[in-house]
Length: 417
Image (cartoon, helix red, strand yellow):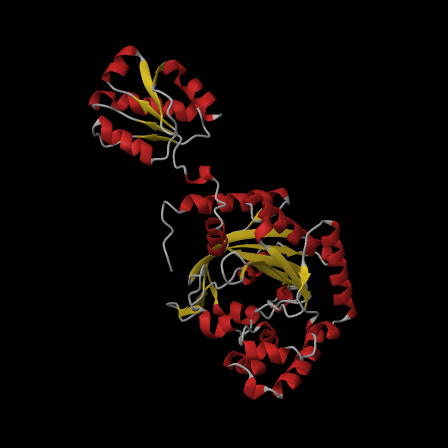
């Protein structure tokens, strides 16, 4: 678990505001859920034999003896909240959320035991059009962040639960012949979650899988038609993708469409966004049958990608636009008044007032370190004349004396350039 320091938060705010803007364009509404839920919620939704439930959850008993868990993912809590508050009854919903999740897993590049996700969940829509919308809006987000050329989309259909049961047995029968040659994780999954073996990175297991039965051959007609329509909609929207027959999701509730946005720009291949359909989850958690689809993206990995590729705009890390100095005790109050005038006149600008005294040299050093483009200089001479000094900090233009009454207008025109 790690702290996000003041020097880092501007990038987080930039990513979060960009996501918020894109989702707002599509009519998605924000929902906020607790970080703690009843443990049973995750056992019922994620699956008791998944790695998350078996090894990664932070679970504890509260003072009443109830088993509680820090949320390892957001979908189950979102479904619980939507059902509990009647948000799904005879209506469609487009929801999103952001916040910390918790998993006790091996640390990896861009991953932490407390990590942050943005999740999107859609309820009550059956067709492939909503699947396509999620992928189209994500493609728009990559464009907004400058990542369009650094991510690629992989999609697959894993069919209905009935179709997967038949395929699962065929896969187990095939792999059982090679049990002694499988890696340890795959041996364990053979009796718990065999479809996850398709996602194995072990070279020996990958070779065995080359001859395994294909999930595509076991797809039901409904899932096949759904997937073909989805591909047609993505083609029409010019969203590039590849079909990955080995793509499965690690959570039990997925069915039909699954997808991942992947980057190769962090060294090893990394997933920056993943999701799919989970049409049975609402009913599984006690609600009425409700079609659903969604995705989640990890903010740590997304921010690492932006920083690695140097795609964070320069303005994001500029903590100030204007730095107001105060040379002497007599000008502290007038300097603070000037700063307030500028904040009122220039509401989109960041105005920092120097506090704590100090020499002219020390104040100008702090003005420079603030990242401000301009310093407003106020001493006793300026106060007596009704003027202020305006000093550019990011170029070689000379300092100017400007009437206090004209300062806001002068800064507005300069900052607009």
